[in-house]
Length: 130
Image (tube, rainbow, N blue to C red):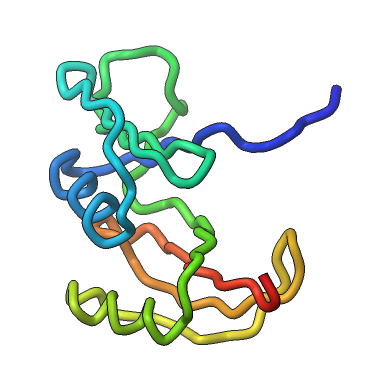
């Protein structure tokens, strides 16, 4: 079996509206599906999707213990780090760490870290020479 890529991730959130607003406005991710009756909102992140779900989502297809605030993920940005920092400040999003030099799947990168409304740790990375 050859895995090619990640298609989507699912984040368990407290408020679909607050979280979708954060990812849509702060990270400019378009909302492509809003199934609030199923407690799911889907956003596009590059070629992948991020789905937001509530802990009480009415489905058996979810983790055994969906937990708010337990995710740790890295988003790759196409902007300059100084522009990202300015943008985050304009939305009153605190940087909790960084910038730090890291090594990602495509090589050297510089990362900063923020928390989303549910305290998930979001790494924002900018690759060098890309």
